[in-house]
Each structure stands twice: as structure tokens, then as C-alpha cells.
Image (cartoon, rainbow, N blue to C red):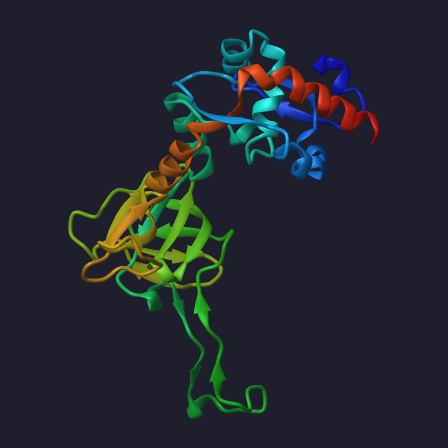
Length: 262
């Protein structure tokens, strides 16, 4: 039934966790046109996804037909298969791919980016204003440490006083702060490393006891890492809306009717 339903949907490529690439139908965008019609018709229940339960497994458990997994995406705010709740192993793979590399942390924002400065002693015909351009690390440049380590900058985050680097060398938290410096090969900007953190474990934001959020830390503010933020978002996806099993045939029939009129 669902195979016939998808025959007129545009195709897209989807990579399975195994790495195999399959072609599926991008019906998720199209059904949003009929979202209001769905909501007047569907009787919802809540369902908690167990670790490792795929959409087809849930559909088979609920409706006796794994092909009806598309209805789970239809009634939730999912735009593709990646919005489905990830089990631990899948999540670990996802988080490491999304936040690769290490964060080299500095003491000051000015260690990462130095705003333009004014100096009357440099006023010339070439620079009649006296303003010196800002000095900052550049995404894509190579950094070289005083201990001979290298890496490529993938992110520059002055608000968090850090740069994120990837490369063959692994940095470690300096035994004595300010004993290891890094310098950009293009910007010539330098700073002394105060600590080293895996990118996924660096601060995404900070929160206080009331749950308020902000970008900078301070007294009373606790860091929330990228890992924790992504994990909490993933956990929210564990509980989904489902169509009441007794209503599934009616909903599918109505959906087919709506799509037939497109």
C-alpha cells in the first residue's frame, strides 16, 4: 500500500548506519501541505521508543505492518530519517562526526581576536587613518605549537575564547599553563594554551539554577557541553506521537485520497 503511495514522490539518497546508500522517497516535505487536514482526522497517542528500535520495528509492533513506518514521520515534526531517536552507538558516531577535533582554550577573548586599534604613530599616506586592522586566527589556516605540534583550524570562537583544530597531532592540556603556545601560519596570531578539550565536550552554552541560558560563563553559570545539549535533544525524540492503532486504516485511506488529488 505505502509503496504505491510513494511512487510520485521525488527521490533522495539516504545513507544507512552500515554505510550502504539506498534511494528513498522524500515524502516528508510534501505531506506538510496537508498537515491541517491530518490534525482534524488523527487520534494521537504517545509512544516511547526503546533503544535501537527502528521506525519499521515500531510500526510492526503497533500496526502489524512495518511498511507503515512512514506514518510515524507524518504525524511528528520529523523532516527525514535522521530526526529519529538515536541509540547509544548511533549517537556516539553522530556526535563524533559532528564535533571532530579538539578545542584549544585561551585565557582571553583578545587571545583569539584582537579588535582594530588606533595608533597615530602609524599614520602614513598608505594608512592615513591610523587604524590598524584586527588580528585574528583564520579558519583553514595551520597552527604550529612551540612544541612542534600542528593542526588545522576548523572553528574560531572568540566568545568562548577558543579555536577548534583537527590534524594528525593530538594536543594535551599543558602541564604548566602558558608553557605551550600556538601560532597561525597565515594570521601570525599567537596565544598560550590554558587547557585542551575534546570539541564535543566544550561548552555549547551556560545555564543558571533557573535554566536561563547565555553564551558566556561566570559566577552561578554552569557550562553545558555540545555532547550534553545534543544528548538532551536526542532524548526529547524518544517520546513520539503515534496514530491510534484502531484509526490507522482510516488515516492511511484518507492520506491516499489526499495524495491522489495532488
